[in-house]
Image (cartoon, rainbow, N blue to C red; front, side):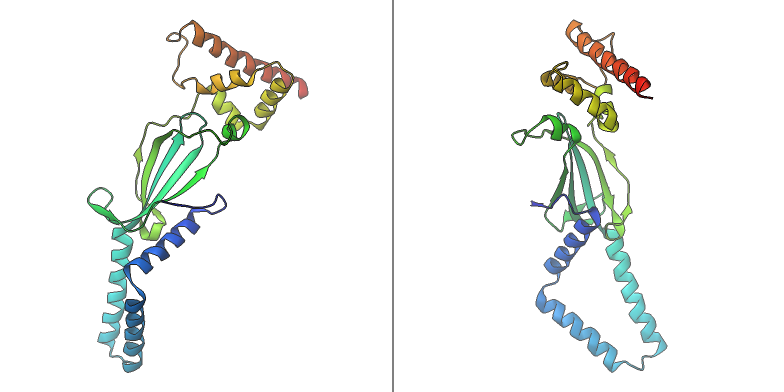
Length: 227
């Protein structure tokens, strides 16, 4: 499996994989013959009849249609159950997404580390990936063609606030620095299931749900004073 750097975007990945497929399917010898054939065709038929021109363009358009319809880039995305980092895997395929298909390239993956990972985990952390979504991209990897959804969740209220609000992240960091909040308690809050309701929670989990509410109330009060 190939890995690419964080600085590469999806279009860069698509282009690199597509070139790899082209080189894999059409070797140097075949490619030279193809180019030679096209040059010969064009030189011998400089005064093409209208019929031959139509045939030439029809063959080119047919090739493009077949490539755009039956060659697609499969993107599968995953999310770590603990730190909410995300991983995307890309594979060029031949066939139809809803039917039979074969792979044309090895998998290429890109990992995007989450803010939670950067703030509370280290390099020894091992991601536990859960499937999030799978989608085919047709027309040379540019056109989205549907999706299959997985079970990876978005996290609880504390996690969502932490990911979305920079002020809330600063607020939590300040409480940890002052010793008012333990880092291990923050990790416990992150681990709480997103669908945990007060009525279904046991006494231990209710204590953590109350902490989430009290932290939010304190943050709102602090923001109100700042304004």
